[in-house]
Figure (tube, rainbow over the protein chains, first blue to last red):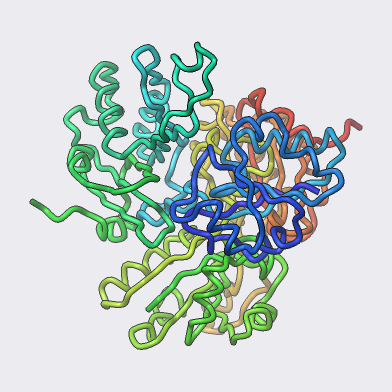
Length: 271
Length: 271
């Protein structure tokens, strides 16, 4: 039996009672720790709270399907930050279970995809999500631009997910066959705003105002005790210190009357 | 203190430990029971499991803000099925709290908006959500059509949320001032497919194929033990018995290679 358990966004107490029951009944508990991370708990803390050893599963273990090795005979749980189907690799595990005759189950939880409703903009007025990557000297993807432009043209909001680099090996170390991991990096709201404005400056498609006046909402550590939400022009968000990861960004479309009062709670005070 | 607690999608054990702590510390616990409903638990069952009285809050109590009456002096929890910001009325309560100087908090959970990822189509490839209403003789809203058309033209998926009518008063009884509630009604996947095909037949904008051959996925009781997912042409879903509520529907855009294997798990066997 293989059970994917979403552990939500904040800390160890965001697991559901159903998820906790799966953990209690498990022979092996893995924590998937490379597509996201829990804001205020690590694997040792989780182990303490769950009363059970929690093994960190890195990209290799998950993508190779090694986490399924024991699932035919044993109860195996894979804890996933947020909800379970935020990353294609988890879908892939469900497919592998079917192929290998392993029973599988899913315990859902909150993810940024729905929890972002806390910023005051209504979920049913969001268009397709976009994801920004850290640029390198030779790789500067901007294919998200057209989706942002299309959402904005339709007057709807865009959730912008920001890159996470965990256990990455530099090109140099990779070339030399050295498995030395770089320090983890999490894109900040400031970096995201800068990247979007830079792409706008050369695409000039009017996805956002080139002067940074487009209304946006920065959301940091959603669902945790230190959650921080600030609404204002993209430009004004550049000078906000949102603190530690994870950050996400919403580029607003038209703000409806029914959204205005709620999002106003998070507006920067006028200078 | 006023705390909005999402209780997730399935049953009483889908509440998070953080949510349960809020319930345990509450002086008053309300259950919002008109924008959705818990698939396999009612207020009495919840009360039994939570060890605490649970008061059903109907539309009037929530929309009038009566649920906040005691929140200045007491700990008041409002349980909401799914996540807390699925309905504008919950945003409104947060705004009222600020106006009235009441501290507020939110405990997130899964909602259909993210849990629908279980159907095998990737969340980052969904466009704007649409909602279908039960039509009456004089009111046949179809403004969702343009959004569906736009999503489909962009090759992305559309989550279709289906109408729930709870504690509605008929026009006749309303006119006579009689507060007699109609039996609850929940739109089925079959009714949704029929409505979409009917609107396509007169709009003829090509949002979906008029012959019902567009690929879609019906999802019923997501997150519960009786969850039922079937993928196939819209036409083929008409003859599937999805059982009791709640139902939702996904009209697929282009299905990517990384989605194909997962969604294939739910395909109708060829006749």
